[in-house]
Length: 229
View 1 (cartoon, rainbow, N blue to C red):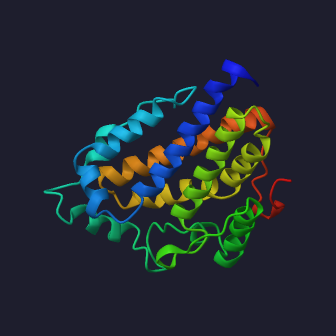
View 2 (cartoon, helix red, strand yellow):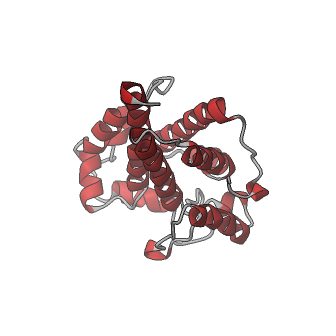
């Protein structure tokens, strides 16, 4: 692809990259700047902006109002809900943000995820003691892959390696366990913000995977198939 023909593809990849980074941010503990961005509607506006750049558009209605819902007076309510649902510091959290606790054994899952990261020259920072299978780390990885795709397209180079990496990683990791987590979440009747956020993430992952499989064929759902060559 050269010239003007490559620009729309690069822009869509850049939008996906920004969305994955935004999801990673939104799943952080709701305090400080993040809580204020939610309360002020800034987070919802950023989602609206980047979702509007996807082509084709994400199917179905999107409840952006839910992404600005902090509950009550907003002081501590969303933080309490985050702890109730995810309780990131314990292995017994009802709706864990660690993929290995949904599709374990966790050690095996962490090793599989880490191989993907290393294949693309990345090393998890382990911020806050998080393991490689934490949702934030997985979303940051997808952000990097989509960004790399956008850069290669913009340079007129073949983006297949990044596309295949994203296809396989979604299929074997967050695309497998996010639906499981959402089922557990629904059973606990979450606040609108987290219900909407998880639903939107699941739909974005599914749409991204569908488009990648249309181009490159179906991905194996087995996490033990290794990484793309």
